[in-house]
Image 1 (tube, rainbow, N blue to C red):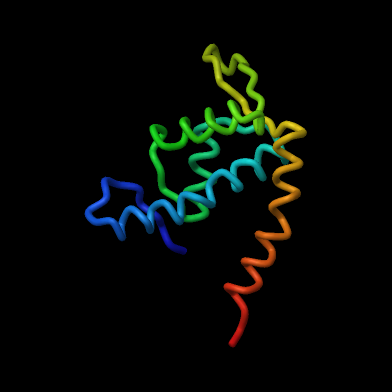
Image 2 (cartoon, rainbow, N blue to C red):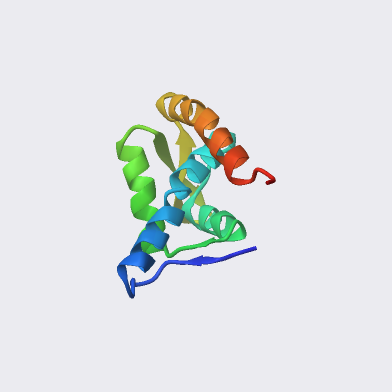
Length: 115
């Protein structure tokens, strides 16, 4: 397993590498939000399990951007006396994820192709 650490870039190649790995995160979030309601802390742990180590200061702006774009919908719930914001995939988000799947499959097949 690899871990992607998001940090202040040292060079432009570090910035590019960070941006390339970060581009997978929104699709990962959409996928999980389509399976069940998700919240920030659980998503952060799930993403870390897949090698993406990011701060809440990185995660929450992604969630907010996906929600603002209409791909996610949020609702607050009281959990042990604290409000927790849960995110679910919207029909628009589901449609986008379905449109992306053939591209994701093609990329995975091509990149992992045995030579």
